Image (cartoon, rainbow, N blue to C red; front, side, top):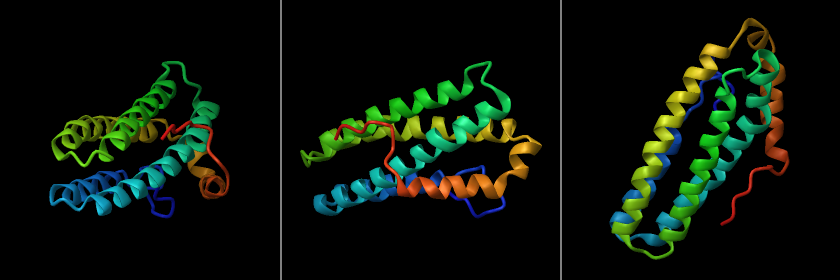
Length: 156
């Protein structure tokens, strides 16, 4: 998550797509150890990213705006679906089967893209003056997430 830019509420989501692309390229040329290492780094980074949203940003938006339309709950549900897809890919990457790997990678890319677009629209639409004035506090809370275990279960 990019917490230092002027657009601190809009995440650097494209880095996760790029990480999966790097993993795919390594697998495509048969460099499975590299692909697995890249995938593990992707998972580690994604876990932290989701934890920051689940534990800081989503509750903040609910605190400030409520969630009358269930938008934040829906975003959290999308996280659950992404974890499911990542879990499937974690299982498949162990087989060194590129075709099967691609079959699992495609829905993950699609779901991530849809979620990222949805989330960025929600964050920008729900960001009120109160949230913007609390920028330093929020960035501090986001950075503190690095030092504690997450609540979301990753079973792989």
